[in-house]
Length: 402
Image (cartoon, rainbow, N blue to C red; front, side, top):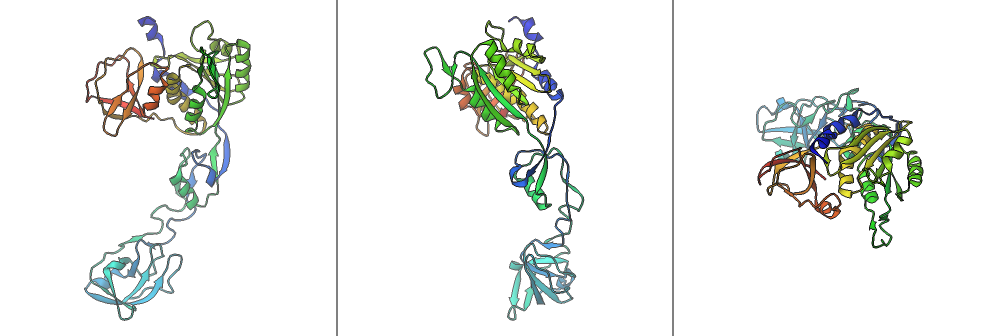
């Protein structure tokens, strides 16, 4: 392909902008709190009462009036013991202290807590001797200091993980209002492919794309559907695509280029596809299709080579799926020094498999987009801009952790 033709291809950034601008349909659901992990909130969640709902002790110790410890040492009469979940029998008066547990409500009249290790119990445990001063409000969490009643504690679109589920439980949410998740189907094409459990003929290979992509989709808020493999037969491919469009998104691997048996783009056009993207300035992954189908469904045509399909799914498919589930697409990049030098990059954005060891990033030797074994060693992809100059060891590069 000549230089002019490469320059006519769509850049990675342009492709992201098109995918992010695609109008998607979203659904509303209510899901049990214990089953909502990975989902996105459909609406703001507000605190139903002050948190904490009372002034509470942050330590096992003694509730006191700070003014009573102005002159030290000082002995106070212990008039009550307050356990978590209980309340004091009455207010705290001058010259008194109350033993109090962590999380218990502060008695009326108290304005500080002294940790138990700073107190000496005397007189048969009904008196406490204090030798260190304390300040007003020490070791107390004030009512509403974590969240006030009526305040928004989780915002619409928030992804629900363990910490967010804890917040929802704390405000009494049982059925969580969330965005529905899309169904995403994966279809592989190619006469040369057999299923992983089959014995390939001498001129065949086992397909790794379907299980690989289905595993990537498990990271996403979606229902993943395996449509298996189909031969390079236009009628069979068309039938399987039509069946696959019962799902919200269809991923098709192989048959995307301009070869004699690359049927998929033509079939999509005959089925009414609006071809948003047809080729990318990316390595690996140039033969790439993004199409909007009648009825609001979407198709991603991915390269047949597994490293290409992997990269395109991470960079592009994940963005659309995240939006359809109510989330916001993010491209999380890190930076680290190179562990060895790199030659100049070509005229396509290059996602190079690498190993990040927590300090530096080691680029793996690129053997091509079919080399799934090198990809299997990698835990990162170095992202090299178009026409980047050669880089020496120690140069800072951006990368995506896998």
